[in-house]
Image (tube, helix red, strand yellow):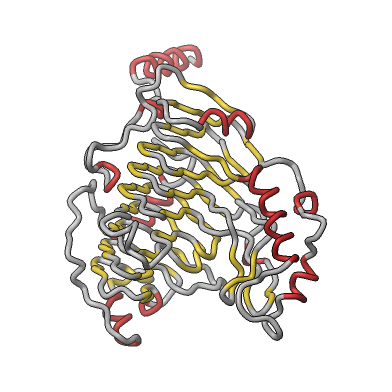
Length: 400
């Protein structure tokens, strides 16, 4: 009997083999990355390569020729401690003593800050992996990057799928502008176009900032963004992914200056789980951003501030999203923008007009006319179906 079942399974597999994720391309209507020619990544490559070390990964994703890169197993940054990266002139306690706001004003400067910069430069060589154009980067089952950050920089036509990226940890935060600033994102899209990010899981790993101490009244952050889209990047789709346990999470547009960003930063965010994100989910400047069918979870005891940041010239179109663990008036935050379109939102299981809730407690009011209606998107599911959908299907390892 067992032999018969095995033969039957083999026959079905032969008739319907598992899809080759490296050859898959973005569907024609799947968000902004489908516009203006679509996103095919490295699907045209003649051969694929499998990588198992940081050095192999960095070499495989470099350059602009078509390439399919599979990640197998866990790849870590170099096995060095923060002390090993530190410049001889750097010491955290002396840094805290020198730049205490009680007696220091303005940005940190001087020998201790120069030593911090040198220390950061030492670490950056091991952390950042730069991804070139015409690349498909796919994780095999269980694949993850730890202590590394992917940077899609000045590239076009990139696909990243089925990959967990944890703990892009900055050993040497800088005190600037009344806050701690860090350098590495789990995934950064900078000056790049046509990017599809799908079924990824991005977290702080085993070193969450939530557990860090406060210095100068601010959390001593060691992580920057989970997934930032900046410096005139455009035509990006982010789908079926998990973003978890992070502070400054999704920053789309890193300056109010429209010189490089006007008419760009067009991003679609759909069918994602966003859990334990304190802020920026996303915070948007300039871009036309479609946010639909995402499930937001705010666990008790976190430093939650807001989810949708309405920045300068932003045009967020939010549809059929769900929130649990927060109140309706906290979901939106005004960052100099004037409007957000929001419809079909459920908060703690109930339909709520969260824009009205914001306007009831904040001044000036935000309008609801963002000047556009999304045309490129797949099925917009009923909001009540979203939590179960993303729980079952979002994140690395859950591509069906």
